[in-house]
Figure 1 (tube, rainbow, N blue to C red):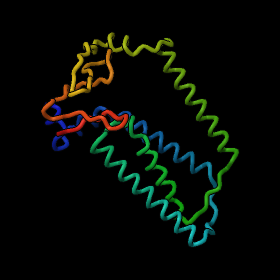
Figure 2: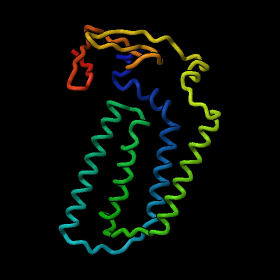
Figure 3: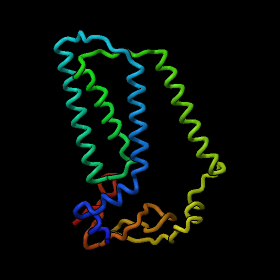
Figure 4: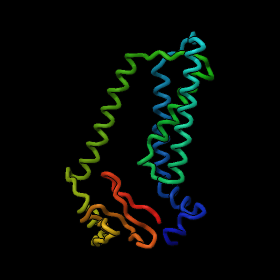
Length: 200
């Protein structure tokens, strides 16, 4: 299918899910682990908040839910790329944790010693993961060579849309993409310091 047909009637969902299923599973499991660890880092006490404070918390939950729903629909309908939408999952788990107050009417007190140990473990995990990734690449940061070895390289071609120059290909130019813009369907507009490509 062509690009236009591919995005019609949610034809892209099957391909999208096959592409991101492992990443999605890992990310959800990681966030679930964080939620469990977070709950273990607090102790619950009976709530003695005033009605005004409870109303503020309820308003906070409504705003949080609205942000999550808005972000989720933008992710699903406009930018279905997991690595660019981690905030959606973070909002979801923050919403779950914050809702514990609503359902159990409890206050949360941080266990400071556990929290300090948790932060140390997070830093060590992050450093170790990045060090392993860099080590596997033999401490060489050369994405161009990687693309060439995988035989994914294609020479970039310079194109113009009105006064806007762009490139189609892998690299060797900026800005770059993989779609040739039809001059009958798109036009270029400069808005302050933003370069905007718009549909006619």
